[in-house]
Image (cartoon, rainbow, N blue to C red; front, top):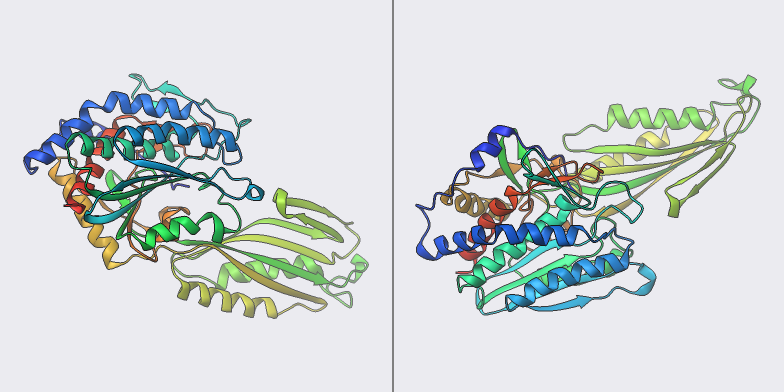
Length: 434
């Protein structure tokens, strides 16, 4: 789950310059060299994983991609395990890889194996793109199989440099990030427990280039939803605005426009994505849709609204919900309404610890000749697994590959960005685990 990824030609040219390692010690120079030497193999790994469809509901495909990455971790001495989910959840489960040393910060590295593309989705699994083949198009190449490859490339470089073995690193690649299994208390239980035994969490959603500047994510908005149910007196349309009342559709319009005009704060958004109104309304939760019927000469008696809701922190959530309830209660004649709220992903607050972690990451990038990294605004990203662990540990996201078109048939990744991200990540991990 990613925000818009933008890559300028000028930045691409700047990043094509050789790595300048003047600020790196001999071990760090060896780490960078190992990343660079394996860059071709990293692209091969991305292709192998991308050629396997792993839409969230394609359980076998998700498991197959997990096996591809598990072999890579095992080859560098990490112990792997597969965490199954209950069969009724219809999710593949999660891959975990462990480096069980005793040195440095305890790190939790997060990726995901699934994509939004189920087996019948349009778009190629893998094809080279660009005049010189500098990009690859494919299902999930950026979100986030490219990020998974960054993790492997970075850890492999540390292994080859002889500095991985005594680290305390846990990698978790989930099988359902794009559509987390319900209940989340089960599908994210192991992740949260691992976070509680860690000091730092790093996640590898795609790196965002914002107006030519490389960024990382220190905060994300929470995702939630609300259900609005409106009832009104049914009657002949000739009585609307009078004894017959205004009907359910006008009442729903009043409420939603009241939200738009009166519930306004920076970072707060809500999107009524489904509205059904008439005299016979049914919403089918499992299909994210429904039916509505009525007549133009009959005042509608029912409206159902399903809406997204996003907020920066719980205080903002509480303010917004209180004001929404006030607006809902101010019913038009002949109508009434109720609203209910559901939380989904918790907020990833911008904390001093997250900002300090960004500083370490930016310094590593700068020392390697790859430029500084700045914070991406929390409103610029969607939901991600990092939000489940951020309440427990210092966290940083957006460390993966750069590309464009996420979640669309045109999704693509800039292949050179895998090497850049792996260098930054490897140096960051090395410095955190000394």
